Length: 259
Image (cartoon, rainbow, N blue to C red; front, side, top):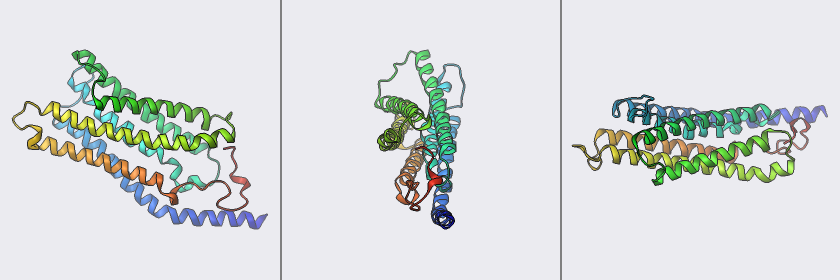
């Protein structure tokens, strides 16, 4: 028994060391890209769109792109990778479940505030809501996100669900996690394009002449795409997935935590 116990930790530590190097390098790149996505969006709204307010004006709308990029892309993407941390591979899963749920909840709160900003601006200015493809993609992503979080909380965090039910729903949960991120990226890209068309429609330098604002906003969109693709790559890379119970060693009684 003692030998099996030692072999388990030796094999676990070996796998963690092998995966950690490239994983944390990717996380460093991911953190840099995510920070740039948010900072570039803030700079765009501050420098070219005259800043922020919370009074129903166009300056209130400027919170919308910032909060949606932060919530539905950066925080959501980061929260999705909690189970890819090599340290989460061994020991009880509950602390990682709580962190996963808390980060997604933070992403959802930012998203809701971002929606409040745009709906308030539209209603204050008599502008129709939810008529564009951008808004359809965005509201679909948010609706699926809400369903995903509630289902994850009810099935994977609360202790009532059986192993059979969790095993059945886990692939669906993982699929919709990636699908929601993809929808969010599509929504952000279409939103950037829509904002530029509206803002540069009647100016001396229209969108098709690629003024500096268009170049900067398009670059921000490319950063969002790069961030999303890297998140999806890390999610899909088999070497960074938490091994299922029984894979690291044939006898791992300490790993069983009820999931």
